[in-house]
Length: 363
Image (cartoon, rainbow, N blue to C red; front, side, top):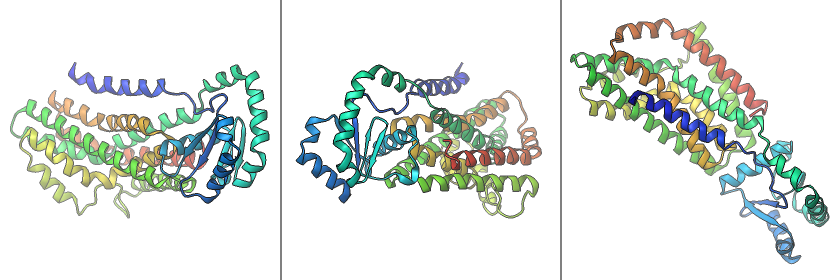
């Protein structure tokens, strides 16, 4: 039963994400004013609103997007729903129903007339607007799919297989299969913790700096580059940039893992080993983090990171259990070596597809 816990936890996280698939739609009778702290044009609009007592007369909700990531996500998702071009987005922006006003002049010249029309129509169409709010969009579905696919690419990475197999072989040398299982699970847990915390830190760094439309495109191109590098490792393995732990690092990594003799040692060494694994596992993670930083609210991003890392470590859990139940780690290493190029091929194709989807604006 204890081995089913990770699967149950993955299922719970998926359930929470799927249950929260409501689209960022404009609430009935609400007008959004998106602005940025220190923006002079935004200040002009705010002065006009205060002078004409607009905040008291109209249901205007102010949303600062420079320092509030969730507001920035809301801003982009509302404009995505309205098919508003990325190149025309900026602040100040007013969203009144299906109407978008950008720039201080357009807002000041047109706000009153557009707001009056919207509120009058809204009173007669409240039901249709509420129904529209319940509609889900493919964007959200693709986000969940991208996280799952990206984590699967990371999960089949040959680097983590090699490290875990070496660890299990070292512990099994003592003849204690149960201790080898505990060491494998402890090592896997420390990898999960370290990768989750690194991902959370990078996510917050990206959201603090703000993820622009062009940065999101760069993430897409990064995915394509990683895809081609993995394809290179399928056709010309060992030549040029290798999408694995650098060859010069491997003796040090092997020495560190070979020194582990206890469960506590396996847990502790996992944090250090995670740094060695970064060159071959960070690519898909960075792509997904860049996507989440632009598309997902902070609380939901934590669920996505949990899901990603649970899937990422799932093969390590399975290998630990298989070795405990008698599967020869030497045989596991032979299988890994035999399927090495195939794993790179699968990862390369998936990363190329993800990159194209991101650049095409389908996610």
